[in-house]
Image 1 (tube, rainbow, N blue to C red):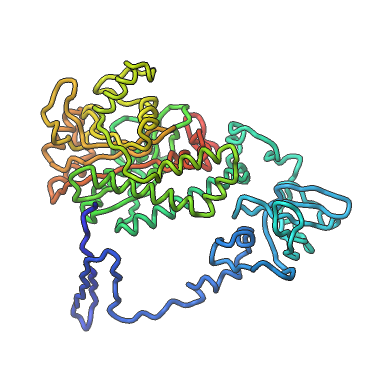
Image 2: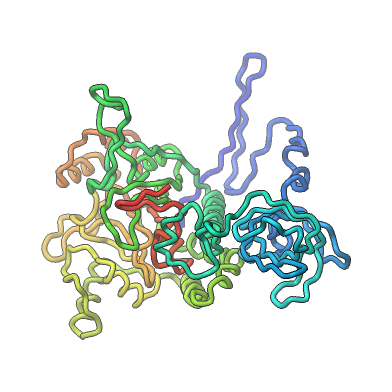
Length: 523
């Protein structure tokens, strides 16, 4: 359980030169803030969805899905043909003697609407063309679709240049499509990933708000390497003057954690979803040099349990919502080969009961036993004090299902992690550990990592000294421990890795619209 926050509602207003304070006090986390004076309602022309929905072009989703965007005016199943106007791109096209059949998609849903177009009006149409079609929305006799558009007026908004258009209705390898990042979102599966990211982001924003977190925007340009791994991008300007733009070295952030810790000393629960950058020269299907990281910091927690409980609830809530949403159902129907894998992954995350929790020491013992008994064979050797490799993580997740591995060796983790109280001063094969964790999932391994943070000034300085670090650019960070420091902890989750897991995608470069990795930065 997270610490209860006392909701103090406080407003100040000036009246005839005097400041009047007004307070609302509530123990309910959902108690509304009552205004000191009545506020006139916003103009319907600005705030009411119905005031602008009719001005927006109708989406195909609003026609074929009953749960589509509520701001778009729906039409009921028409007993009589109704006239509508659609906008979209031609995904399929068949030309007959008297009529042509065009599959129209606008990206709002993954299927197409069939438009029946008189052949004389289809001049200039081809795959890839953008069009505006007006006609009758009527019942269809073709299998697989309930309605179709009998087009009466056709306007080509942009020619498709079929002979040059590189996106064809045939299998094209992911490697080839990565050379066309500006065009591949027009393929249904890549459009689906855009919808998935949007859904996950929206759902997470709601979840954090309901749990009284404040969303923050930490800086992208930083003075330090949070992980102290040295894999950073330096920031320089075109200004060639001596000293550079900032006078001292600056970098693209590898994590917003340190800045979130500063903000968590003012408001107790903060989170961010920000781009992060790591100059890892890795070509594996798990690495990008630019990706989005969801990070959160929570004050006034003294054990890992509140963090683990919160993360488990967050993921289960997210997956449950996905399974009930249209985007989830469409994802499952989009690719028969991946459907079973996706459904299995989703179901495994919401099974009743708490996810397994084991210590690093227990994990090493389990893995060593598996090797000894001939149940597993690993490329990387196992001994206490070494980092778990992906092959070890996948074995543990296959054994337990979703599992939190906690309390890793202190020397294998960054300087800011709090030493596990039970291991202080411990040496030998099972030496000091830190109060940290990794969440491991089947098939992919690590998804989330986090820890309690060292909140004591002298102890933090000692950890930095042990790691061969000086305060330098981190003096502001250590100073947080001098003025009202509190026990706190946090975690980080790679959004792209989450998307890979939920969408059953093997290569992380497929879930990013414009992926960047070593040697590649297209568009």
